[in-house]
Amino acid sequence: MFLSVVVCFIACHGGPADHFSTFTEELTRKGYHVQIYATGPALKKCQKRGIQNVVPFSLENISEQEAATELAKKCSCANVIITDVGHVFDVILQKTLQSSNSTSLRFAYYDNPEGYVPGGYSAVAAQVMRAAQKVLFANANLVEEPLYQEPFREFYLPPQKKIGLGYYPIHQAEHIAQRRASEQSAIRAQLFSTYSLTDQGQKVLVYAGGNNEEYFSKALPVFLTFLQGASQQEDLSRFVVLLQQHPGAKEKNLDGKLVQQWLEQHVEKAPPFFISALNVDDAQVVADGMLYYQTSMGPQFVLAGIPTIQVGHHTYEDILVKNRLCSIVTNVDSLKLALARLQEDPFVESGNEAIMQGLGIRPDWANRLECAMKKVPTK
Image (cartoon, rainbow, N blue to C red; front, side, top):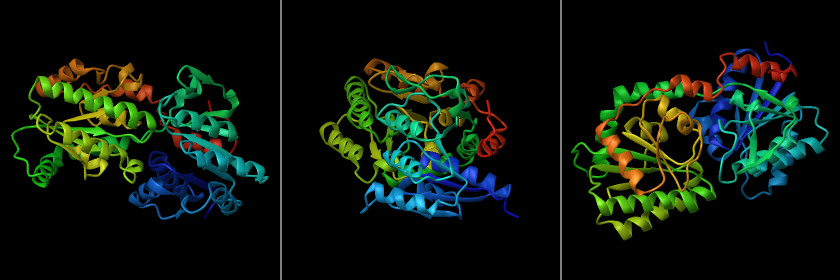
């Protein structure tokens, strides 16, 4: 028997869509009527999760305002509407819902564990959070910590507007760890066969790509520059490098084109380097090391037992860096050192307790979500 509460989740990005899928399963189990509206990578994520009550919407061949108006009408009977925060469309939708005199309780859901995310995410998220009535934070710690819309530029949200949930997909990290123990050899053999490589014990490095201007113009070019410098000083053929593209970056393929151009110029000394055809889970299973600049999946890499290296034009002070759970690369020498450590000592200190604390995980996240929807304040 359904409760009277109708909940609509609206997702544009894969990360929050994964969270929304879990929330949908939990709320449905409790008897709530739940609908997810999803587009692009978010739709693919929901479909992969096997969520039945997901409705596609498109932002192609239609203005974002028109799309927002249509969605607002579809959600007009909902008691609760929850959007993600990383897309400009979320700003338009929240404002459209507000101007339509909707009686729905409007939430923005901030899924990233960090209070500042480069590449424009935080600037957009700030607008969405201001437009929403309440903000749900996956990382419950962020209720008490500063939020930034730009580097060193804090923005204010009233305390009564913030609600900490304490959710992170720990189960996914556990699943990856289990698969690494049982399936890594098979996926590795398939990978080497695909690229006609002879397995001589090379370490597989998976670079987790992004989908914002800072990644395309700074982080990735710097990584390639460091790799070039290191390859000129020593033989890197003991490594195989995969670029695991962000789902949202695949269509324009800007990073793939940049890597191909780089390979054409440095093919003689570069280590074997490929654009990954693996899904993101299989890439983590086969990886001997994960490289990244900024990703909300960073904690998952470490929780899954994967040696992890942050590579960038400067250090991004995320949970892994703050807790010394990853190597940090900001120049050629530090890349060489990180790779040497990976080659010699792949042991990963779990750091589970520090990560759990940093992620602000709360075992009662589902009850917190339910309380928020009933307009009961949760601290």
